[in-house]
Length: 331
Image (cartoon, rainbow, N blue to C red; front, side, top):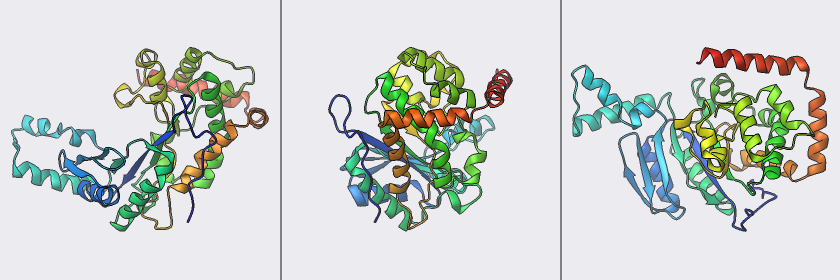
């Protein structure tokens, strides 16, 4: 059995044990089945909001959320559309039956998502036990269909929110991301989607410059200037919104989708939940390698210099030109 490797920093700067949240996307199971896998492992009770979503309350680990990743359904905005053409489902059995059918149909393409609460690092095996129960219940993951661009996401609490610590993690991730893509064999369907687009080359070169020593404000401004989107393999916008809400709010980013929290939103891995031999410990080990590199300043500098040597002026120019072109197209 593969064990969860420890991070180099086990505590926050305040001396608290670090925590991590896990998000799993899957098909083949409905909200009630997902909730049952949670309650069977960590207790609690399922409170359904609709056929699409609900919460597991009073579990040993905290509150879990289950939802279909389609906002128009979970918010029931589809009812407004039906009413505009003269169809009123009301709030009884008819609506419930329609939602049950919609849940099954949309679940073929749109994933259900299990959002776990932040848990101490030593509780990750409990989350993996829930993953195992979901596998046994028939959950399907990224590779079950060409349509399934499903992902696994870790929200890893920062060990230190000072600029040197933040910059070291960002640099280490930029230096490790190609290896992670190779090791994880990131699914082609996910590469085609906008969810995990690579960071632009001019941003990579800017951050890896050995003379780059920004203030916190400068670091956030540079991130927002070079990468004004949450669709990155490492999404720093939730963390930066937690550190400086006004700064992120003023930027042209996906405000309604950004949930401020003191964590790195690592969203690159596939979700191979239907593989009985897969475990969360495998993608977790890739994040551990990011932090291990960040914890070795000399190695980080040497690796950055090698990476910068491969960064051509043409690549950097094209990254900036493409950003300018697409930003004009979206305005």
